[in-house]
Length: 350
Ligand code: MRU
Image (cartoon, protein in one colour):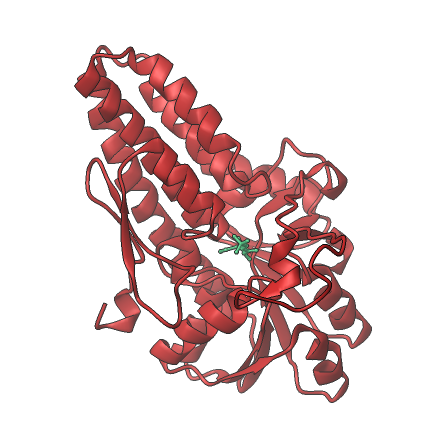
């Protein structure tokens, strides 16, 4: 962990996943080891691991752990994998990478001659997904950095760095690469209520990387744009529908509206594993709703009437027409998105 450019917050150790616990950052750099399907599912649900690509890696690890457990106990491996797929698949509904990773694991297991082969294949799959994520992050980060002007003042929402991908980062990867090229004057970080991924995680990453940044309350983003202090917005995605509608952290839509109103480009950076050509549009994307207490309680203390009703969607949908471009490792997609997304998703499966 000493070289910030090589931060790997997810480590696969054949049979167990080591995670830098994201619920404890930035106060503590605390690692946990998860070695059962239930423990992986809990880590995803409680957001010890979070961010669409990292959730996918954790899910693949959960499948590999299930296969190993079946081999050791003599249980049929296909039954164990089906059970694990259901358990993991229910954890967080919006990130499509979760289902993508589970499906990849099921495919690897199909046609394997015996349980030991399945275990071997799934071990390798987890490692491969981690390596592919690094390659994808770096490629899309190069493409995205080229879109930013010199001296860029960039606004971002939520956390899309190494913590969120297990590798280099997507939107934050674009910012990292642009910073390495000397192009970034300032990164404005939305705090990203209610779980504060911006304030807790993005700030932690940018500090480690030495990238200049300023934390702002979510509600200040439009005012900052009105003052002419934002040149571009770059965010990540949990799922991109076939028509280019983007599900991402709650508050992203408001940022996109403000960016449009001020003539500021709004970029979405995501690997092709986040494209979902089977979901036609944003209205069809399942949006996770989380505990009321994430809004009612801050740092263990109630900030409102304790039983007040709450609506706490974890994500919102930004319509495709507010998205200037989608930056993937297979190229920068421009509107109209339908055909571009179909082609990028197809290239990914070749
Ligand atoms: O609820 P989270 O923290 O998992 O939400 C994360 C986001 O919304 C990210 O922007 C998205 O997953 C992309 S991470 C590269």
